[in-house]
Amino acid sequence: MSQKDDLLREELDGLLDILKGEVQSLVINRHVFWEVQDIIRSNQRIQIGSTFYDWMGSAYASSMSIAVRRQVDEAPRSISFINFLTQIRSRPLVVSRAWYKSLFPGGDYPPNWADKCFDRLAGVGQDHVRADAVVNEIAALKDRTAHVAKYVNKRVAHRDAHDFRPLPRFRDIDAAVEHLDRLTIR
Image (cartoon, rainbow, N blue to C red):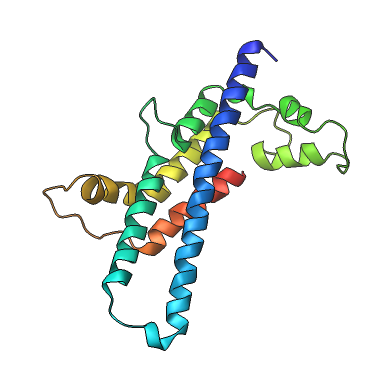
């Protein structure tokens, strides 16, 4: 392991901590929003037309969409999941089996546990993550967030002169958050 690789791993670890915090906030915010929706659905007395409910839905859609859009921002100075994955794609050898296993010195782990975990991450028997697998992760992330990101660019951050339809639904935003959560765990 070279010093340059160690520095990149340290940088990626710091970025992942930031990204993990942002995605956790998204997951918590989604949970709170849907819990409030369940409360409203279960209490007929509060199922009324309401400016507050309209605002809550609009605020949820806007804030969550902006946070999702931030994760696919490719500007070089942006801390985003896309840029995190792009760094790994450009130097996939830095995420190696040997380095990964070094994270589990001794301890109460079952035999070959670190190897099995790395196999799930990089593929059975792989010595490092493959650049083509990271390219696929980037493509999947862009695909799952494209409509939400376009909504932010056309309606939230800017008001495009052209009509933007269809607007994303809550389920589109939630699907993007779920994908980011799976990536964070991975």
